[in-house]
Length: 282
Image (cartoon, rainbow, N blue to C red; front, side, top):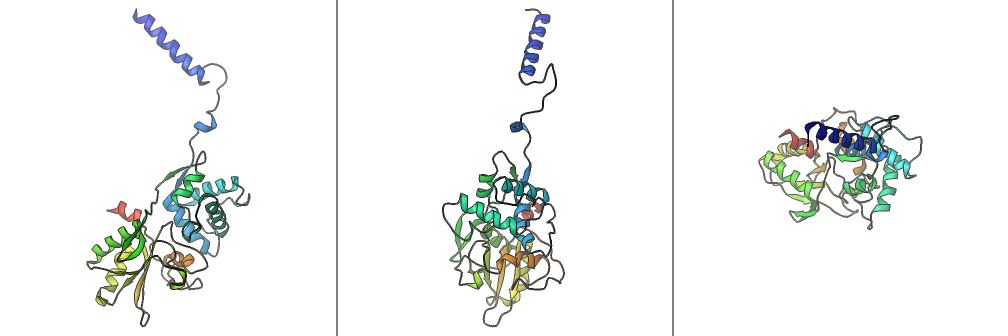
């Protein structure tokens, strides 16, 4: 076959393929909706907004989370779970309540960490099809045991890294617990208490190391109950309810002590680090 004939056949095939997609001849047509790029939801930033925004006194936004929040709120509105007028990038209490309704739809069991108003991977994957894609995914892993206490795998990895950074062996004295313990702050995942009376001189180094890897951590110098209290920032399993953990990430970020939602946040702002961000810095 001649070179000219082969070229003509190839050209015809190309034009036929283009015509089948509406790309050749006649008016131009837009790509089908299903081929259009879906918006991206940054899971890390979304969870961070869900942990910070509900406690803000206004509709302040969490940096880097605005677009992700708007996208998820649009999906909730499409499900009839959020008011049509709620369109900004603030993940407030109304959004958290709407997310709880969504959680109750998709989970087959009811527990404090699956109905906490924080978007986990499973819940987002149930909402995402044809609406958005997910990046920077936060996987808290499964329940495991550390020092005889139940924690999730993400929390255990963070704890062990903080041990290495503080150059001291640490002991978790409380992981996941019941609602009667510590005003319910330990009902879900990502919240631990750590012994200090084994090495009081290492307390400051331990708190600093915990904060470095992504915990909101405080030394509780309470007579007879001295300990370090730490919450894994960005953990989707932190259990929010009628207890104080709802406000503790917000309190930590804005200088409070995380003892109650009415704590003053007039102190010096603290940098907020989370585990995935810390790992990328290594």
